[in-house]
Image 1 (cartoon, helix red, strand yellow):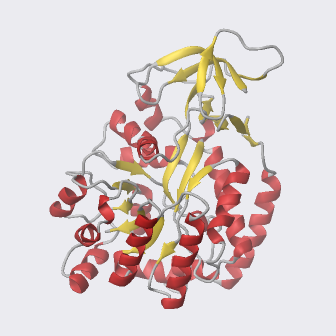
Image 2 (cartoon, helix red, strand yellow):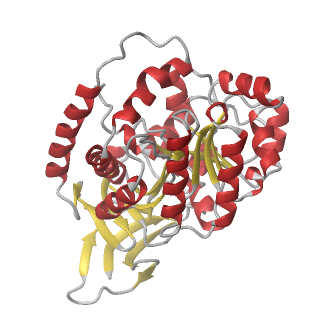
Length: 409
């Protein structure tokens, strides 16, 4: 049992503040009058405690991309970006690199206040065992997770079938999702196999949807309908665990179909800007919208600020979108435990109240304010240092793996 002394706790749902001593166990937390003698205690005087964060769409495999060599020529389109950069990188990954990505990415997420990562993985030449390897790395750092492998037809039938086998093998052991790259690299045959696989394991699909206009153009040309319509016809959107990432180019009909479905959508504002694919709009989509980092970094807080600054959201709405991943996890019986907390050393020059907490989050709160992180009742970050793993050794190893990867690019 862990105790937080003199903590100012902010309820992530009601925004109500309460100050006192908090007893934290694996799945719950509660206020107590006294702390037992000899108990493990964290002094939280002058600090805020709230539900830890979660990343609703990540690409941990991009962790070694920071500062990598530029492509041989400048990309001229989004598909060019994929071919010259990301599909070139993912084909070079081996298990040592994947492990380095997962550990380094997990540390980045944890030190940014996250205890849960929903990841979308790709490594066409190192598929077998990749998901279990990533899961073990995340658990080593102390993070919970929901993983998938990015199924696609772009690398041929052998790689497609190996991806299906890896997905099935993993789902027999752990909760996860059935990953798909995007409509324009997924045949009808693979889409059906993926949806059937999701149904057989009682889970959902995790897929990029209308990230770029070219995804919609391809879908209309090949299948006579738009992306959301195509997914809806297969029943993928009837599944409450299904995640669509991006949704930048949905038209009005697609927005209505999505709103009336059971699926969820993940906004990735920074990635959209980085790739020049357009600006996300939530018009007509309803409120089942989450926030992801799309492999840009591990800070859900940073992505929430980007969502807010892109326009159209009030601080309250942006904060709700940041926290809504907890609703997704809870409704789907996955993970949203009360023993997952973040301790924030946030010394504001202005009062922090129930009414203005969301404004503090979107205007000021950042990774630098994350002092400690508690996952399932145990400290995984203590005073800005990792507890369960040797951060220095992991990052040293990651730099070596990055050099190996960059030589192959």
